Length: 189
Image (cartoon, rainbow, N blue to C red):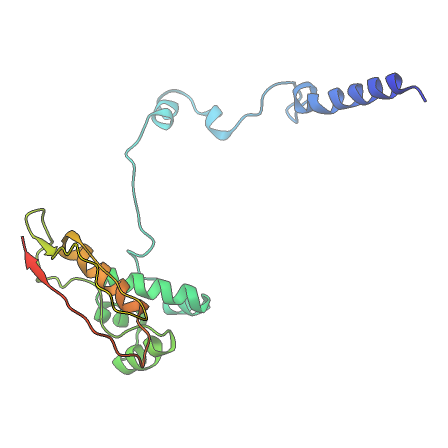
């Protein structure tokens, strides 16, 4: 076996394969680069296409999908979607878009998806929090020894929305049927 000959044949074959599209004739009859529809624009149309444009940001939860589409989603996707809808829209608006009665919405849908009936969306009558409107969680440097089990200590300055989110997340850690002792001190800064 001549290894040099095998190696050279292999290199030649790979070079021929790697040249690919660069040396082939296109469907238009000549060799060249691939053209996209924007390459055929001329004058003002081409300038408008190439200029920068305003960035548009959208959120898929801003528009409520139809109830038929919603039911096609998996259970975890339905749960997440409904929770996001409830953060952005009122329950009344969701029910009217989907054509559901109060019983169908609260009694069946929320119950089936294991979602709390309370909304986490701030009410429209409340003003949005500003930097001056913040709440303070009292700081305690001494750790609290509760013996067996777990304990949570929260220190810092939080605005109303962030504090609400943290407290909701803590509530998710609690198990049904257990008893808990809590000391909570919140003061306005």
